[in-house]
Length: 158
Image (cartoon, rainbow, N blue to C red; front, side):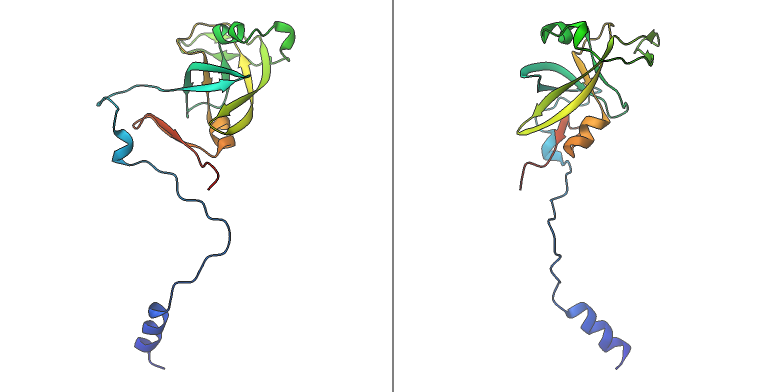
């Protein structure tokens, strides 16, 4: 059999079906920029349901690994210091200051129909945000975020 005939048979054959459950690729397009004001350097800020309450001013930070809760949200959720477990590793604030956490708490967080447990480190420091969500939350959802498009995407069933 000649090389050209092998080549022709190999590439003229019908595509083979891939078995398994394949999800569409998550991505962003120019259509996802519709409604955003450009150019911008805005943080990615969303609204989520945390501990059964709708919470605004939630910043999504891909560059961090610690989910942080600030005093406004802690008080707003009617949480008490007794609800916290020990967390004794210091953190560095946006101003570069060392912050000693008050403790840690696990709460349910709902994004659309998806619900995941999030371990928040509670700090007593100023922030314009109520909380910061990070890579562990994105990974738990299987989500992808884009600050350019000011969006978070994740699969919903099919």
